[in-house]
Image 1 (spheres, chains in turn purple, brown):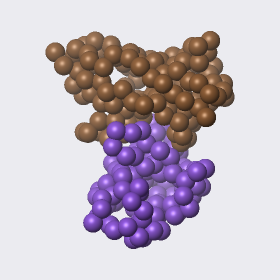
Image 2 (image 1 turned 30 degrees about the vertical axis):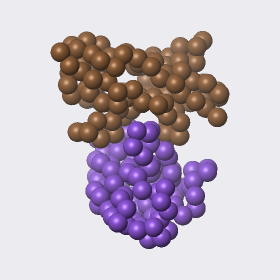
Image 3 (image 1 turned 90 degrees about the vertical axis):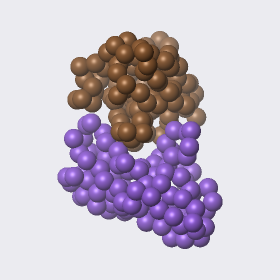
Image 4 (image 1 turned 180 degrees about the vertical axis):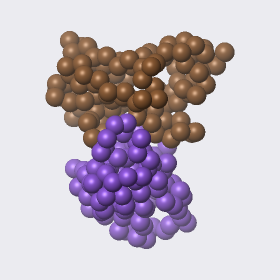
Length: 107
Length: 115
């Protein structure tokens, strides 16, 4: 299985901050990397797919980059609704695997 | 917009079989992959397996011996069965649509295993 490791596990930030979350794959996955946002009691919501393509309806302050083994999710200017947990997921091979999550909290 | 509505027993005893069903509405059932994913505090998000409209399946190797995912095209539904459950299978179970990434999700079902 491909292991996905996110950093940091948690992050405190303020409204308006620029935030970057990192995801590393245990082997090269090209750009087969997706990002999700999850709020308590809700299913995950896809933000970015194929490493850098913004899902329809997702605000442009979210962006993704990377290829191979190292990827980043950036939120350019944090909004109150962005405080949530973020997950990466690889779709290079099965079994599909997720990172352990990054909890973004209000400072 | 595609909606996924799932249901099934939420309380099981050890060794019983977990059974969940997901109904798809508002969109095409054909041409997509349909998945089961679970989430527990200990293991995080874990992909269980997938099925397409023609019944072709793919399962997580660690669960393969206990999992069956099936599809009922006439009802636009797909189902999950997980046999011989233990406390390690306690989680919120989600159905989801997608092959590489998952756009549409069910509401989630909390499954508890307790004697």
